[in-house]
Image (tube, rainbow, N blue to C red; front, side, top):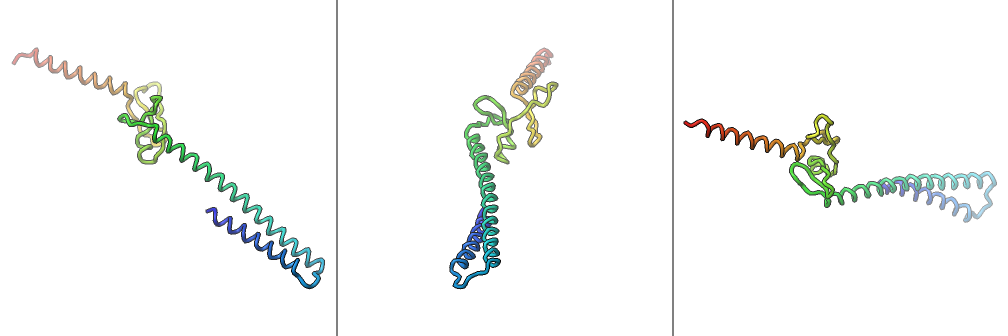
Length: 158
């Protein structure tokens, strides 16, 4: 969390401030060695604060990147349309239904292999999808088979 590093930074700065106040408000003269010790403590506390601020800056950068990715994903949600069995964008690219519905990820589908061009595969969840062209060919083949069957029945006069 961000609040923990900030608490450490504030603690280090407060310690450094308290030591500086002690030095300036001291009614007696501090010996040189004691003064050097207190100055070293101030420098150490300020160095700790600087390190924690750097860590906090890195953490904020990571959060900014995560927010950017989430915004991009949210934008994709509005761009994709469900065209069974996959989601499609305006360019006609296919996206995995499972990844989109379950994980809210827009994962582009890939051709399985040159030898199987009628199938698309999600490289994230490993689900395969049949292409629209393959579905049309299969449906046409079923339709022809039905027509041939019906024609064969008609030819056999009972």
